[in-house]
Amino acid sequence: MSDSEEDSQDRQLKIVVIGDGACGKTSLATRFAQEAFGKQYKQTIGLDFFLKRISLPGNLNVTLQVWDIGGQTLGGKMLDKYVYGAHVS
Figure (cartoon, rainbow, N blue to C red):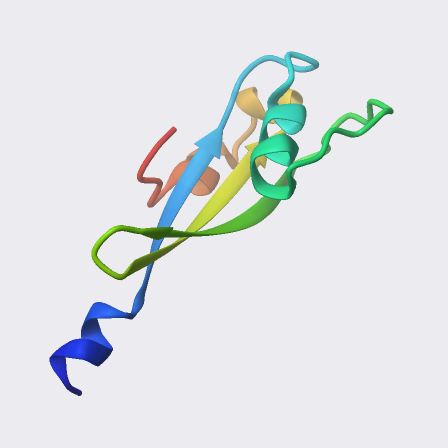
């Protein structure tokens, strides 16, 4: 692989959004990833995730995985598995 091919490869970052139920995590994640707000509130059960691709200076493409963890999941057994490997939480 040439240097130019390596420079243009995508990087991935995992971002986990956690917090109390009904505090706006899903609205924040939806606004960031899809540039839209939902007009109706629907509680996140378990988790939901979004992808956002961005280009940074220096020919660096980054795919952000935004994991939206439902508020009721915070005390659950799966939380440590959802957060595992996160670059930001």
